Image 1 (tube, rainbow, N blue to C red):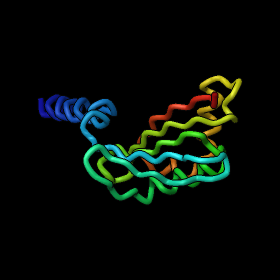
Image 2 (image 1 turned 180 degrees about the vertical axis):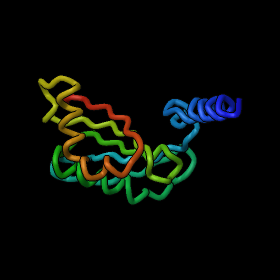
Image 3 (image 1 turned 120 degrees about the horizontal axis):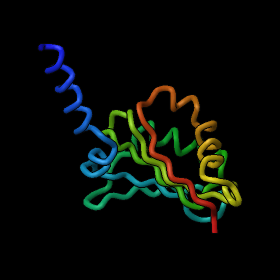
Length: 129
């Protein structure tokens, strides 16, 4: 009988800690690249006030900027700042003509040393127009 209540409690906690609930309640820090392909100016924005960019967000941003020279890059630590879950949006010419799966594999390969230390990654890649 005790085992069933433990399993039920664990399922209840997992149901509350989904990416959708985390994304819906977390304040957002957005990093974007602007300017020419080679320049990578960091713009941090928040709806209410400027926030500090976490070390994890900065590391991911640097790795992706080096490899993909993105026209748009958003990296958000959506785990409340602990660095266990990131949401990334990335647009690059290198994704032109590729399937979503191939583009995601390219990003995962670039982030393989970071991915091993985090719990989850939400990734959205887009070809550059």
